[in-house]
Length: 100
Image 1 (spheres, rainbow, N blue to C red):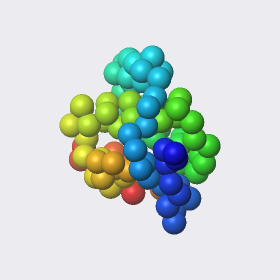
Image 2 (image 1 turned 120 degrees about the vertical axis):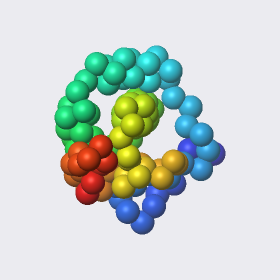
Image 3 (image 1 turned 90 degrees about the vertical axis):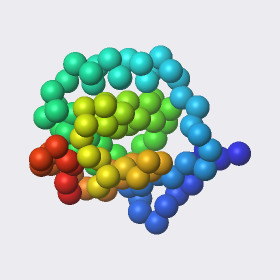
C-alpha cells in the first residue's frame, strides 16, 4: 500500500493514508523550531522549495514546521490546506501570513 500519491504539481505531495513517522524525529524538529525566530522558520520553509526528495524524516520536518507556524498564529493557508503542504513557491511573512 502506498502512503503517498503524486499530484500534477511535482512540488505537492498528497497522502492517501496518515503517514507513520518516527515521533522522535518529529519531536526533535518541533523542539528546534520552537526555539527559532519567525524569520528563521520562513527561511527553513523556503529551503524546502524545489526539494523533491521525500522520506519519513522529511515528513516529520515538514509537519513540525507547519505545526510551529500554526502554533504561533501564522496564517499558512497559502501553502497548507489542512492535509497537503505545497513547497512550489517561496513565501514571505506579511502581516502574520505566509504569502507567495
